[in-house]
Amino acid sequence: MAEKKKREIHKRVEECIHCNACKRKCKFLTKYDICIGDTEKLRELAYHCYLCGECTRVCPKGIDGREIILDFRKEQVKEGKYGLKQRGYSGILLEKKNYLFKNHRKAKGAKTVFFPGCNFPAYYPKTLEKLLSIFKKAGIPPFYDCCGKPVLELGLKAEANAIFRRLNQRFQEFGIEEIVLACPNCYYHFGNQLNVKITTVYEKLKELGVGKKVEGAYSCFYPCPDREDKVWMEGLSHFISGEISEKKNLQCCGMGGCAFVQEAELSREMAKSTQGGEKPLISYCSTCIGQFSKEGNQEAEHFLPLILETGEKADYSHSFWNRFKHKFY
Image (cartoon, rainbow, N blue to C red; front, top):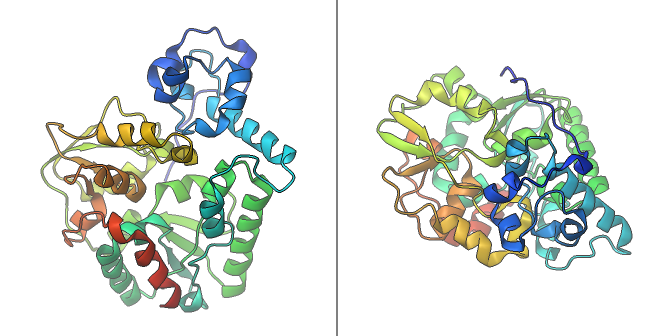
């Protein structure tokens, strides 16, 4: 996919003019009555930020608030004797640092593998099984692992880099040249860190000639990393014959940046705000739809169950088991 040219962004926070454009777009900044230029307060609240990038998108000075917050988190990691100073993330790190449910057994010797990530298997087990069946016929086995994005977003840069090295080493050992991704967060987190070709699941389904077109009218919630360039929508366009409009005035699903640990009530508020729209909500991020469904929006849809005609809604009640079982496939 061709990348679009981005406007210049930087981390020179001293250029903040305190216009409060960022605060008007961010529930976190609004709650604490601060803007991205209030660095001392932001440093204290670094783990309350959703890292959604909305502040950067609206800043007239091009200040990259997300990267500033990430730097604050990395500083706190350096200060902590045993890693994170902040508490409440032990469960996330237990699962993600050396992915608890990783399984590479069927991938050895394959040129192309399917990398479903963490939350798509958690929320869409039936649709995953159909994808596995389709890819098996094409000689594409699954490769169960975590991209490491939550680890990096907690400020653990060394640990996140170790995940990149581990994945690259395994890809080289197995002779893997291409990975097919179901998650836009994995896609943007990997960036150019991997020594393999990266393909979206929608591009691969189109290549295989599989999938039904999505009909009807939907309001699409674009996941935070893809909101500006909408790169994933380029691959999805082949499967859309209905009317897709952008869901406006919704900052984040509530799961971004692991901020839900510190801001549980605010995260629920964000997810609940998706209810009651004129058109049903749709997205290509399983984390987002899982969160919306969990907080009451039972009409929220993921593109893949529609394209593959499984009729599946997000199964948030069994998310742990849905991931766990693939460790032994």
